[in-house]
Image (cartoon, rainbow, N blue to C red; front, side):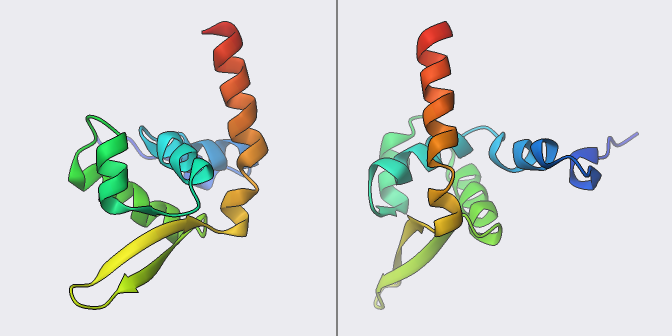
Length: 107
């Protein structure tokens, strides 16, 4: 029997947020974007040791669809893009800082 992802149906904002940013690698992607103004796909591949190309692509698409990051073209031939935080993504800064401080203190 297939388990359903009930977090998408919850009225709880925490559950919905955790469903989006709680996936493996997502916080690391957001960390990289908060430390750098823009990142290219290859930059993520280089900094996130162990992430598969498919997972990276899926996480970037998910964050883009949620309006947390945006993709901007910087070259047409061949097509190349870079990713930046939107205002919605920048507003996650204090959350990332709090998680970082907690991890540093307790882990």
